[in-house]
Every structure is written in structure tokens, then in C-alpha cells.
Image (cartoon, rainbow, N blue to C red; front, side):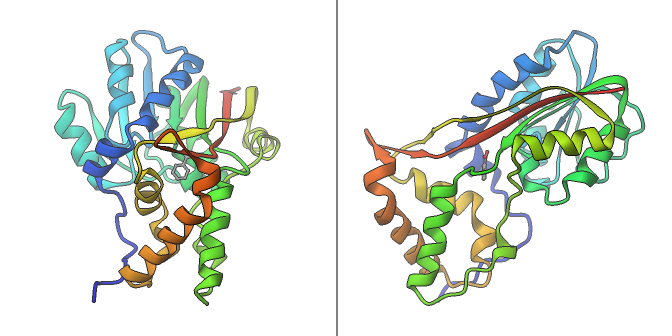
Length: 258
Ligand code: BEZ
């Protein structure tokens, strides 16, 4: 019998780089919205293993990469030893009017206290500084998570809503929060972005990598049953040309600290 899943640092940096490289690929579009200038100081919040931090560094930015996961930061330092990286929490940033811009790709949906994160981001920006982010919006991966919930029910298990790992706001909700904190919201959009998950095991890999929190306390065999059930449930609608297509829905925002 295998050990039940634990809730500590859930990030496997090698797996992330090996099978989920698409995350930073899409982030290049967000860098266009950021419009970074040479010599600016920019925080890459939720930098993962540092690929977008490196893109900013190569553009002549004084960039710092930050991530809550020590595994990710270790890997980022190993890959890009010239770039400063630090472990840190978006809701308690240790900065005071330090950055010209704060950039965040595919991270803020992990933070369930968005007001605290926005306050901390606001505080860390210089006056006139900008905050640019993309993350999962309301409805993100809903087909997948609905199917997971269905498999729990079919196995007679209780699906605990509080274990849902993500915060997926609508663009209206998040823009309002930004304004409440003091940002002038100059750009906000929400859009569907069907996202291919590489290979026949793409959906399984995605759930195993990102959905761990939903399975805390379950035996390995039970988790595998749930994931196989999801694959069977969604194959007809989500598997095309040897690739799973996840129903990503994105939010993109840009705010200015006035
Ligand atoms: C996302 O980028 O939308 C995402 C990634 C992993 C888990 C949930 C959402």
C-alpha cells in the first residue's frame, strides 16, 4: 500500500519543466502587456523555475524572481545563477515601494486571499508603478474539476469544497478588488484559451501535478481510479489529435499605483 498524499511543498520542479513548459510559453504574451523598459526594477511574482524571469533579464531589466516553493527557486537558481531569486509569499512581500513593475503569470489563482496579495503588491510598487498579471478566471478548468467531483461521488467519497485549490475570479470581481486597494485599472480582460496538454497522458499529468490538494488523505490507488475515471469521462470531448485540450479561461489585468 502506498503512502497517502501529503500537503507540503507540492511542486516538483523537474516535472514542471519537463511536462508543463507551456505555462511560461503563454506568459510571453503577458510580457508584451507589461512593456518592460531597460533598467527598470521588476518583480516576477510566482516565477516558478525562472524562464520568464530570464526573458526579462535578457531585456535589460533589473529583475528579481520570487516563488513560494523552495523547490522551484532551487531549480531557478540552478538554471539562471546570475539572476536574483528568493522564496517569498505574495501576501507578505518584504518590499517597500521598491519596484517599477510587478509581473505575475499563472500564479495568482493559487492565492486564496486576493485582497492581501493585492495590498502587498501595491505596497511593493513605487508610485506610478504598474502591476500586470494573467491567471485563471472564473470557469477555468471547470470541465475537469466537475468531472473530478463526479468521480468522487461515483466512488462514494466526499468531495470537500474547501480543498478546491484555486481562486478563479471574474474580471469584474478582480478589477473591483484592484480598485479597492488603490489601483487605477487600465486594462482588464477575460477570454477562453483552450490549452493543449502534451501527449496521451497530458490530462493525467496535469491533474497529478496541479490537483494534488483535492486528493489529500486518499490512497494512491484511489487517486488513480479518480483520474482514470476523469479520462474516460472526458476523452470524447477533450482529446483530439493525440492531445488533451484543457478548458483554460484567462484573466489579464494591468493596474497603475496612483
Ligand atoms: C492555470 O494556469 O490556469 C492553472 C494552472 C494550474 C492549475 C490551475 C490553473
